[in-house]
Length: 210
Image (cartoon, rainbow, N blue to C red; front, side, top):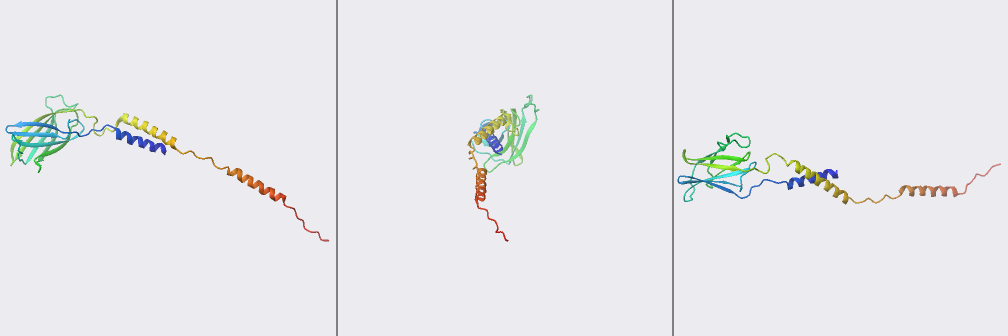
């Protein structure tokens, strides 16, 4: 039982210490469409594959004032003219129609399946007509780990070593048991004393009648 507990502790420590892909900083891209400025912001400093990335899309005029719109239609493709993204043929990967929020922006979550070049297009509509559009060339880096891959053979080895170490510590800290009292020997001495008392009592005989 102690070994199983120690191994469980080791696995938890290995999982806690495994590298995790995280969102750090932000990354902006700009596209000028005539007198309009389209701003695309990622919630990570460097977009990589296997990471759920929030895309923030805004439309401004050249003085920095937000331009109202009803919706923006977004498409994400692998880059045309390339050999594909690690075996993926050039094709549509994401399509969405996003409303303009009260914060004068639209947001979309998307996980790029593999590193490589992508193309993101935006088309803004207001009153049923197109008012602006833009295209962004995005280079997605290689993530540290793909989603659903688990924590790998290396982490399993670390978990085993940590579990073995925890087992050794638990065994070292286990209190030493005191030797049992010699109860059997004491009981034997008591029986022997009782036997001696019985043999030392005088014998009585009955009187004979003539």
